[in-house]
Image 1 (cartoon, rainbow, N blue to C red):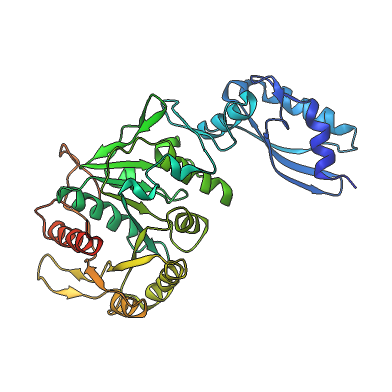
Image 2 (cartoon, rainbow, N blue to C red):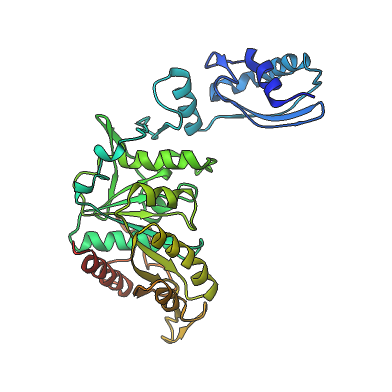
Length: 373
């Protein structure tokens, strides 16, 4: 029976036209499935090689004919920018697997062990780390993170923000960021918006492409965000975590044992129940929970001022009680009254003078009081 190993060995002779190296050596053969004598796979090519896709397909078929495989089912596509940087690292041997490049070709490199010796992760850096977590998606965690970061900056604090939701990055769009980071020396300067220094996987991906990574790669990227970014002097660094208790959340708890945590939920009983898992993870790893933020607490009619509790009531308070912490804030269901014609337009950041903007300033003050910084 033909195995994947047999097929990869047979394909070693097939060369990527532009990169002039073996497809298998560069890891360009993906998603392989073998059933009896039929094979299906995806093959990545450099964009400049797409005009020679037919020749590559012919070479693959010829290489596999020795294994009695007639016509393989091929899906040939061009590499994304990230995949190109990853393959470039392999072909040049200049950086470890997982290297990503910014859109201005600024590299991000992983450093592995000893990271805390050279970055803001060092306990003596004086940075207060606050992870914003939720049990499930769709509760407005990123909205809370972005507006809390901006509110802390409005309070005069030096604030950084890492969009750690690598699969579902949204912070650049939410803050109206259109420019991309630049490399200065051997560091990348984060984008500053509303007084907040921001870094996100969204800066390193073209055309809103999906990220298809396994756990270890996520940890590498997160370490890159600490090691390769020129954060300067910070008082607070907020991390917008992916929902749930997966790899990134675990990496954060391991890499930053001194971090504190805010749990975001809606009033709905199920959302609060699921959010309790994220809180339990923080407690289990000895991380302090600053408190709970209840988002989408109610909808207030602009016409009548009446409030409708569309997701029920009490979820945030019950969650805070379960986690033995405080309910820090309750924000209504809605969106900022911002207009695209405004010079500082952003879809999700509330103006400081707005009612919700004032409530976020109050939340920021509560965080400052609890952190003592």
